[in-house]
Image 1 (tube, rainbow, N blue to C red):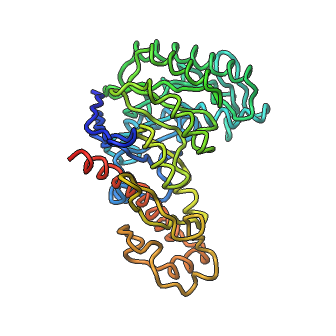
Image 2 (spheres, rainbow, N blue to C red; image 1 turned 90 degrees about the vertical axis):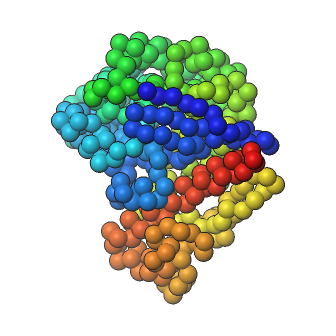
Image 3 (tube, rainbow, N blue to C red; image 1 turned 180 degrees about the vertical axis):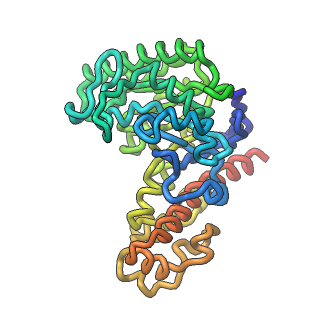
Length: 383
């Protein structure tokens, strides 16, 4: 069964260590979740993920899983855990964010009160995704934590539009809860935890109203979503400061899409957030952007101090062609222990698949190193 237990609280901020129990194992937070959008974390094997420090992954986006490999094939494999050969805890999203992105082109996707209607990218068939079909798909995916279907709120929407999206998200949440209560387990007999998603855009009164609605529902955890979260980190922290005083201690707090930079994890954890996911570490690695910095004390807390411009090595630059240093001097990842910047520069220029794997290993390792440093810091200041 899903169970959350708070172990330690930092004395100077809202950061905390919790233990999340799931049918596929435990997770100690704060913890970053690498994203396997299309049934795999790009260019990393499950063993490489474990070696990098991964405890839990976002194992499959519901929209993409419906499109390929398809729910029938996933069920034939016995779920995403088997399909991905990942035995640890897993979270899936509802597909709401992808539908939000697609709906910017009305020829591809449209949203109405029932849900979303989009064209299958390969067959062209119309696919319907709503509260019930999203939950049904997530039952087949088989993740330990599943998300209620929501309408993601764009930053640019006026307040009336944000209210409409928030209220629709609340109506969809009630439908999601009803479906989940009738079907509390995955297609493979494992209990699944259902999280609701706080919307409300950049408006404090709407964010607080959305949180109050979610707190009234029988949910296992609270996600904070919308385009702002993770995209605008100053506003993200401000929104968390509005909400944190009312977040229950015994429920997991999840900021969706946070993790563009290592410091982002530190900033939201200091506001009481437990878990987060982002495609950026692996996506940016593939395109030649490698995290570079060091974890240093800041008072009784920590920060990620950049040691290169913007905290990243842009490995394609010619200045790295003869640079025999590792990406990060103190990094213990496989890549930094065995390859220099010059090696990686050459592999990148050759468009080598080996480069992509090595780069992703490094960036994911850095994110997990930050999370481990936060956990150790919190524990240290409780002894």
